[in-house]
Length: 229
Image (cartoon, rainbow, N blue to C red):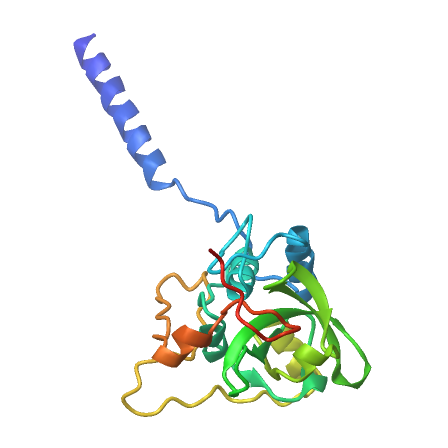
């Protein structure tokens, strides 16, 4: 009887240990998404207020909004618009933009540096587009690329979604090469997906000028800084 009890106990322990080894964790979020899925998710936060350095979900700045939206689909973006611009290949021609691509604009200074970012929502004739973004004056809204303030500050697009890359190849649209980094520069241009767990995203360090200009609240009408007390 004693031997039988011991045998049953050992068998139970063995079964438990085997069960533990087979336990797996299922990812709770999607690792990729279509451009329309990205827009649909971002539109849930339409009219959310602007807040400097806001990363959501109750308030956003421009780069905080794009980072928040794409994180839902497994993508890890820098928390600055200039940093996001350095993470992916540029799209120089507007006609090559697709829904879900990022679009970059100058900030308050007309110096050619990235200071604002949004997500292409709808393509229009002539390379124009509607885009979803966090505006300093109105929060999360949809704007037109033809609006004077944005038309005069548009710089380029950036491609992040795998599906958009596949579509570009299928349509034989030439993909532009990532921006080159000078030897000795520690900045990283490569985009890192959240599903590449073995890789670590190293965000590019901001320069002094970028810290002063990136995502600074401003009034699009007067082009003056908005100072929050």
